[in-house]
Length: 70
Image: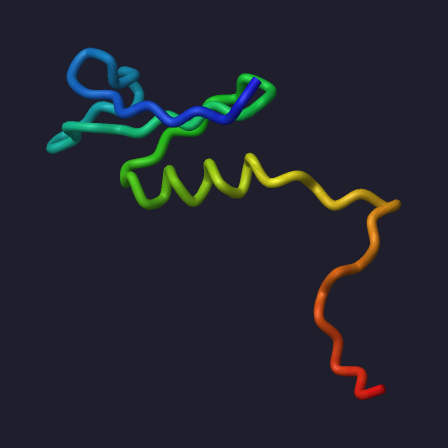
């Protein structure tokens, strides 16, 4: 399952997220089905990207730049 982002408005906003002045909430659902609720589209996008990036495996080479000067 892919990571998804959905903008919730009005009655679609979960009751625990409703409050004074709350007009929209962004729901990010990860591959496991866990939901993350955020107030801004920027934060939702950042979380979605971080959740969709594959975790580095122990077998993968370290591709980080180094300070070596060969």
